[in-house]
Image (cartoon, rainbow, N blue to C red; front, top):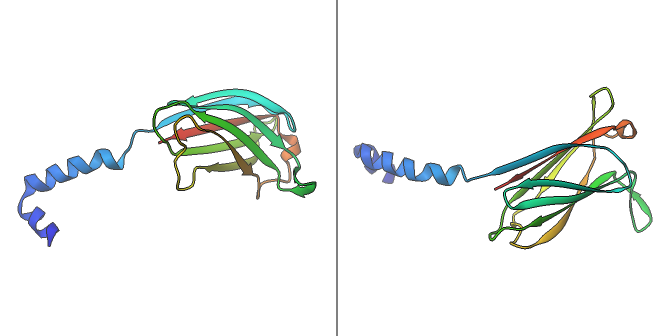
Amino acid sequence: MWTRRLARRPLTALAALLLAVPLTFAASHLGSKRYQFSPNQNLTIHIAAGEVEVTSILFEFPGATLGFRTANRARVKLINKGQKGVSVGLAISLFDKDDRLVGATTGGTKGINLKPGAETEYNLPFHHLTAHLERAAFFFIAMEIR
C-alpha cells in the first residue's frame, strides 16, 4: 500500500530514496599494512582506521589452550580511542618469499560494537589453508571500521 502511494508521488519517492542512501552506506575507514612475519613472538604494530588502532599481533603456531594443541591462530589486540561504538572487521593474509598466499583468516565484531575506550583481543584461527604456514615470510593485515 505504502509503495503504491510513493509511485503516485515521484518527488516523495525520490526524497525517501535520497534519505535512505546515507543510512545504507555508513561511513567506514580502512587501514592496512605489510609486516615481516615472525611466529610465536608478540609483534608491536600500528594500524589505524578511524579512531581504532591495532597495537600488536601474536601468531601462535601451533596454537595451544590449557596445554592442548589447537588451531594455528593470530591474536590481534586493538583499542577504540573514539567516542562511539564501532563495528570492526579484520583480515590477515600470509605470504611466502615468492609472494604465494600460504594462509588467510578473517574476523571481527559479531553483533555487538566495540565500545568507546575499550581494548580487546581477537583470536583469528587459520582453519583451511594451513599446510604451508611455516613458509610465511610476510603478512598483510587490514582493518575496516564502520
